[in-house]
Length: 223
Picture (tube, one colour):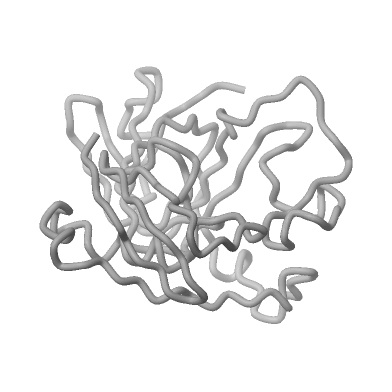
């Protein structure tokens, strides 16, 4: 397996990354190819597709061994399910699959052609092994059944960022940050209204508390 590219995103740590691709479509990412693949011919025809598949490596979750059973966070971290019935990053082979929107292709840069994508659930610097076009007629299954995930409530949190703190966050990031926080970055088994959590987004440390379905940003610190 050869690494063909790396993706650049605003997430420098794992905490806070959306649990699935497309949940926060405004999240931007840039895919920069390795020198051996900086050839415009490898992308010929890709600009006709609205979405693409990324096959990538869970580079921050490498382990020597693996377990046939894992604890999905969305089930509270208590119930065990088969690893192949989940999207857990702890797998026999640390490979991830994400569907993202292809916003545009920047054909000529100092790093060769660069793909600009939206909705990626990847950490900054994640290695990418392959890119394939998303095919609506084959990849979309409107009647698909979601197994154990269907009963899980995906209610989004209400997000409050006090005006005194908003000025410390670039206005171009306000909407995307609010969408990220609304998806509740916390593990499902943590529900302490007094605990202060933090995510690092675009080089900014965002500290917040959650009480019931209300998330309040309590401090903003630049790295």
